[in-house]
Image (cartoon, rainbow, N blue to C red; front, side):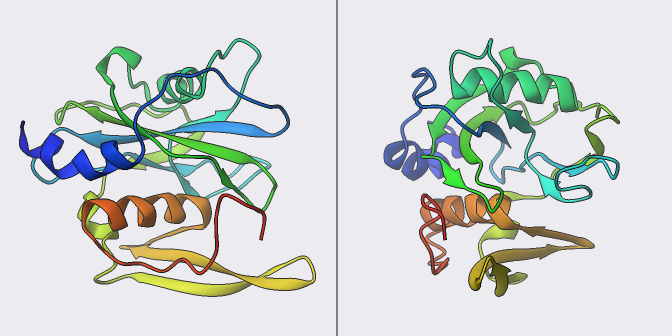
Length: 200
């Protein structure tokens, strides 16, 4: 077992990878949490293009909404990663699959977690991302830069996780996914103060 496999084994045990078909209907999306195969894995994140109608400028994983031709969440996540950052699907080794998290826009987002070569080369599609970056996964272990903010949701407020990574504010469902990974991989003990598998 290499260092990456050993590090990610709690994640794989807790959320086994599953290529089962999409279930249900409505607003559904698949995202790819792509981690590099090295002793200190890095994770692919993109800065969403400013012209997009939803979440412009926000930091997100490669991914997007379920399309009719997508058999499974992995199909969606891998297709979108190919389109957005030119990551070939064949380079991704599935490791884990989280249950869906629910966003403030009522999307069910299903994170598909895979390992990719450390020397991968990315090229962003400017229609989707302004740029991409690959911070170390350990930056999300909560030792610094992690905070919860009370933010308005309808008539009440909910706790929303944020990470400050350099000049980037990683927040919302992306931060929630990273915090859940950090809790398993690094035993970070981050309390999100809500169940992200349900609406607030």
